[in-house]
Length: 316
Image (cartoon, rainbow, N blue to C red; front, side, top):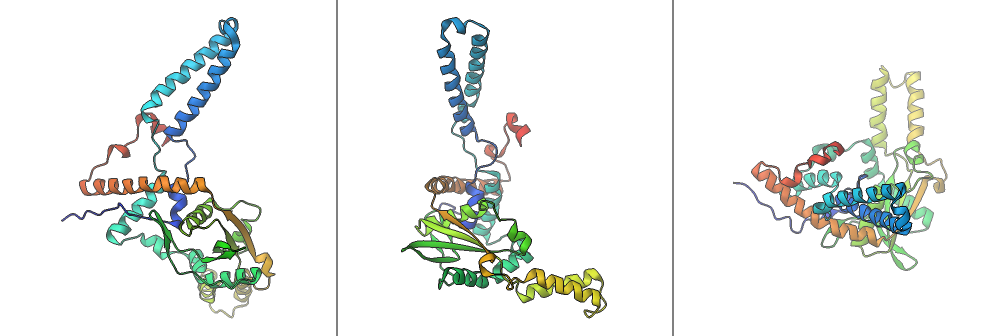
């Protein structure tokens, strides 16, 4: 017997906020329509300002032709002017969420993780300790899941700053190279959106993302050393060439010899109401898509919304 699940109250996790809310590079039909409207208004104003004499000349005729072309393009877009489709990344995430909510199944590949995520999870207490030491805080790892009608998530740290609620999310970099990549750059949009979602569910106004460079846990180092010995074909871990490579690897995976203040990159994040409104607007559409997915899954057919429009095939 086929199972039918009610996605009416499905929530998006804070870490997935970027995937569902961030817009793609190409404008949506709604955005294209609005852009054309503005351009048409500008070109029409320029044409009107020419006066009748210039309008009858070559430049005026050329401007009139351009206006006619814009009006034609607007007419073509008219049926789609309210379309604001979900980004491709949102659909990919929602297909995974569909399986999790309905069957309790997730991606085995994602669950398995890798050495980077392993360090991130295991080194989190050390990263929080580094933040506490630098900011003279006494924060502990938060385990409470915060939620509203649309979003849910568990921030790393929920504390106060200047008497106001303050959210801290820590990221443990794998090594110096991955840490240094973020120097002089704006915060990764993935983490910016995650913070916006945290600020929403905790009803907070400000927070931060702290990239931390802390020692790699011993179990992870040992796994990497084992791979190193296999790669080198070392008959014994006492071989001189292996000992040199081992010392180099351990040095590149531990950072306690560096000044604490130089092992953190701090990115302040303020609440952005436009971003939060975007989340509140898009998540009901995500729920609609979950229902559409279920219909396609149970019937074995695509919905019309899943089929590309002929004029857009070249863009896909």
